[in-house]
Amino acid sequence: MLVHPQIDPIAIQLGPLAVRWYGLMYLIGFACFILLGRYRIKRNPEGAFTTSMLDDMLFYGVLGVIVGGRLGHIFFYQFGYYLEHPLEIFAVWQGGMSFHGGFLGVIAAMALLARKYHLRWLVVTDFIAPLVPLGLGAGRIGNFINAELWGRPTDMPWGMIFPYVDNIPRHPSQLYEFALEGLAFFTLMWIYSARPRPVGAVSGVFLIGYGVFRSFAEFFREPDEGFMGVMTLGISMGQWLSLPMILAGIIMLAWAYRTQTPVSARRKAGKAGKAANAVIAGKRGSKER
Image (cartoon, rainbow, N blue to C red; front, side, top):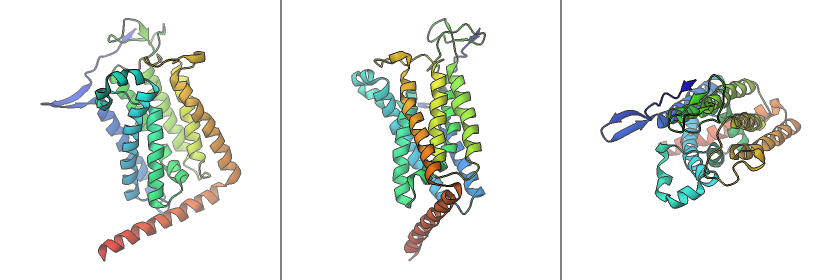
């Protein structure tokens, strides 16, 4: 039977300044976003996006992840606790981020970015969807280091004891989610998005893929405490929140293939990119004058 290594959550201590592994995992996720995004832009220089737009995407996305992820954790999982301890709402370095809340935050942020650059919202979400899974996987490694979001009891030989919790062998569900929501999900999204797809199709596959992987992993994860009805009908809160994603993804994918073709989608994206580049060029020109 394995035992959790009880890694110090603080990676680097410089006097009063503490850099935590959880925060470093987020930085790794953001770095993967930039590197993969630059690679995609380089492979399609005539597309809708530029490296300067990618930097804006990261900025908007970081705000969406942090604000949405924290609010999602508060309202979806531990509203009562934070109602009694409101100051801890701002202690994001201690963990406590909801993917579903962060997802909604990023969706709102990308809507603002699409409006800024006069792009279709789904064109933007199609571009960022394959860049996200590795960041999700890094976040799960952060959960493992923090010994949080542990699994349900198991008698499997790879069961792991989390001393901070109890002496019962449990599924290392954080590692399961790293493998599913991180590596497997990234592989799926990267391969599917490598070829031209109708606008909205990549976003639809993202919704379906994450919803399915997360729902499966939830069977091995201990349900989060502090939320009434967390196991209603035998379904955890994470699974309840994933169901609308799966349904929305199926509808979006069917709509994309029924109303468009990959070629027309690519042409629309190219036109949108030219329009956005023209806007950027105009702004630069006005500054030079």
